[in-house]
Length: 477
Length: 82
Image (cartoon, rainbow over all chains, first blue to last red; front, top):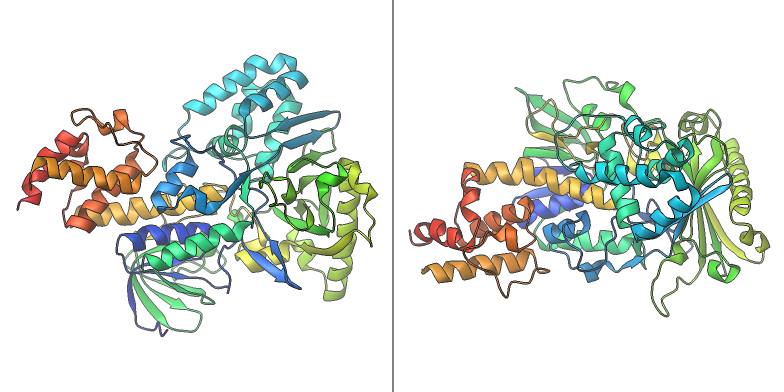
């Protein structure tokens, strides 16, 4: 497909969850739309790769926002309707239960808020009323509005919840599953994450994230959209406050009425011809991660591990900030993908343990190839040891007999896959809530627009496409 | 096209965009939002489907005319019969 000189109604940068969802909406309503993706795989942050015939998910530990069939008005239902996807097609299997593990206290949660509520009240009896007040505050807040001021969530929550440890425990999973900001997030994001994780819940397709991306790609294709892989955008050319055309990596130039970029806020600004290629440095996310993946020839539940996800912190104070070391193992997330309720005879064939911890991008970047491999294997061992402390049942695993494969990714891997500067998984700390930019026909969707998680990213793509393209063009004609 | 046919067209569209809604007992005089779980995104889709399937344009300032089946029929009848 030769693109040079072509004109499209809409160009979408990035074939991640947000880009695909925006693309489906636009193609569905007969817009001539193209998605440009610089990798050869779709999904962006939520993709998968194969080594020796074994498929590994990246990104997805859990899809949030799970609600049982029949519950209406939640993000998951809105999303399925907007994309005309049948719920059954996504094969969403709920978690068993998860656990927040802090020194001396554990709070478990599943997809029923009442269970988490009882766990919290049991561990913090005097926080019953504050918890109710927090829920009330969350219920009243319209977090999906594209307008709204940025309020630091900690300030709001600490005024209501008077036990600092409980505040930390509530923040821990929310930070790990979506905060681009150190030790805090916008209150709007807190509300989105709180609802999507604690009030709704975790699920995943038995086959992993590819069930979702496959469905999105099929929808986009059957709606008539065009997709070009391995084609990054090198420049957005500006003219009179508008984007006039895009220069692609192969030098070709294409024209578009609207551009929706899911490449990240700073990353997109740096493509613009009037802005310096180093602009926005202060808004590059500082938070990156390592993740280890251990493949077992046993089911974790046969070893007595039943949690789907464990969020751990073994310090008095929970710190979610850039570490000065290669990794910070004081807190993290352990995900056991086997422990979703897949149904009878649908267990994953192999056992899996995934461990995520904070990491320092620059420190990893500075290593030469040999040191990089050495440090990777060191970090792997440190995190394995930590995992054994949090889930002692796993100590019985024999490193040679029971572990059949291992892999690990670092901030450099994340940068390569997502294109996010600094390997910042959750993008820029300052989001572009409205999705608008300095150009009247260039919009931001995805992580940096501020809706989080897989469902959030898709809703972001949908909202931006609806508001700035479909509505606008509907009322003009 | 009769008003009843137009109401059926709108119901067919709603069934398409919100297959999880029960449309067996939709009262034509009652606001759709008050009897079905429809939000502004769904209303946008009703407008978009009217355009796509029937070539009918509903400008944004007129979205309110689509509140109930009766008001849809009243508002859309001249457009369908143009």
